[in-house]
Image 1: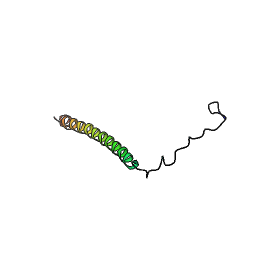
Image 2: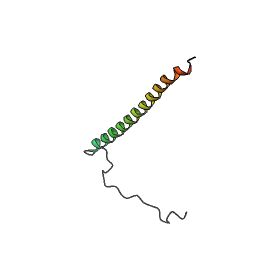
Image 3: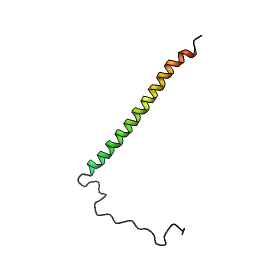
Image 4: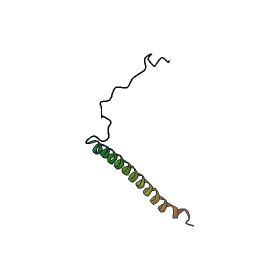
Amino acid sequence: MTMLTPGVAFKLAPQPAGSRDASRPGAAAVYLAIVKRFSMHALKMLAAAAAVAAVMALKVAVYLPGLFHH
């Protein structure tokens, strides 16, 4: 035993019957909302990355021809 752990093992609090049951009414809507929120966040991140890549590509397209000008 270390100093940070008590002598008695921790026990998880008992869960009410059916609290983690995915088939209860409304559970599907909650999970769907979570998936939608995550998807929208991921889509926003991809859009931001695409915008940064577009700006970088535009800068390369503008400055690259100047490098080869004699």
